[in-house]
Amino acid sequence: MKIGITQRLFLAILAAAFLSVVSMFIIMQWSIDRGFKRYVGSIEQTRLTRLAGQLEERYATQESWDFLKNDPGAWRRILVASIPDEEPGTPDRARRGQNASPPDGKDSRPPLPPHLGRGFAMRVFLLDTGKLPLIGPKDIPANAVTRPLHHQDQIVGYLGLLPRKQLSDEHQVRFLKEQKFALAMVAGMVVLVAAGFSLLLARRLVRPIRALATATDRLAAGEFAARVPVTSGDELGHLARDFNALALTLEKNDQARRQWVADISHELRTPLTVLRGEIEALQDGVRPVNPPAIHSLHGEVLRLGRLVDDLYQLSLSDLGALTYHKEELDLTSLISTALAPYRQEFARKNITLATAVPWEKPAMIFADAERLHQLFTNLLDNALKYTDPGGEVAIRLTCSDGMAKVDMEDSAPGVAKEDLDRLFDRLYRVETSRNRAAGGAGLGLAICRNIVEAHAGSIAARNSARGGIEISVTLPLAEGNR
Image (cartoon, rainbow, N blue to C red; front, top):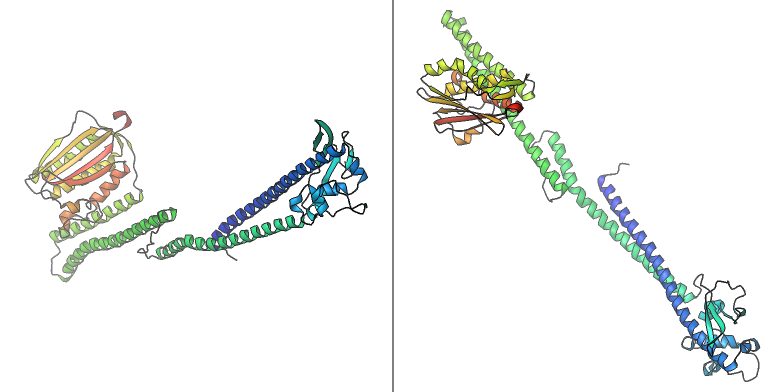
């Protein structure tokens, strides 16, 4: 039989409550026994004190203990007279005094009260000055505790009481039984209440776990909209918030994946449609087979190849499969190498290229030269494509706080503020209708972000004061150049 978490929690809480109640019951029972015996002992000591006073008074009148030997009933009468408030059935002559004698002259032994006959009288003993037994049990331990009896400042005997081994009075025994029974009833009621409370608490604790398990099953089945209510601020509430965050991330990733597949299909469909149309035109004789037609087909194939190559590069960078051969490099030299082939292109488009790079001062970084060349080439290519003729592009390099920062700023056209954060998303273009021959597939900046992050750096976009976009790339300097 499989035990669920509700039953486990219930049994754990109930076991803890049961052990607590049992421990309390044992301690209370021991405390009651000990306390009641102490109480009974204090009563007997009071009786012993009264009895000592009675014996000292009787000894003062007789000046010896012979009266106890000559009158066998005297000891019992003194015992009864020592507690006159607790023996209502005592004969009148015992209340009138210890010197009274039976009217017929015969030996009379008044019956002892039950609380004396069953305990106290059986354990009290009297010793003479030599500590020899006069009255009491036969076997008196040598180390028995006694109290001296005095007459005219002299010790005339010793009175003692043997310790009680167990309660013998039926009233006392019944009282203890009643108290223990009441305590057992209370303990049983507490266990029952704890069982009910444990069951409710276990169900209350397991309810959010069950909701989480149900939502997890839905999530595993592909239902990424599954959420669980957050009803507390404890660990379960924190777990519920983490689950909701996970479900939201998976939902966004699923949407991004669907959008990714749709965008790739759309990007591939366009050059393939163009190729198909031109080839069918050649087949039907609508368009003659000549070098311009072949050149057009070749251009479409090149664009399709670039798109597939960009997709492949992006997938490798996403998986971390791009090979990086890092070494200490001069960042100024990398920028200069990347700028060299673009200077004539910017001049041909009548775009002013301004650089603020300290060429004479090397900025050493630990990086892969090929990947950083790809990074700067993509950024320069975007600046060339999306800057209007007659505009300007500015590049500057600054180093501070152990970081090298490259800012590439261009002039109009710009990008709306809400689109800046999405520039690095794959297949995202601000103008979806832009000519693909100029605009590309929107993968360049996504690849740039992966390259920068692989070098422990960061890349960001913001509006430029020149009216266009400013791309900032931050990379850590090498240890010896900080």
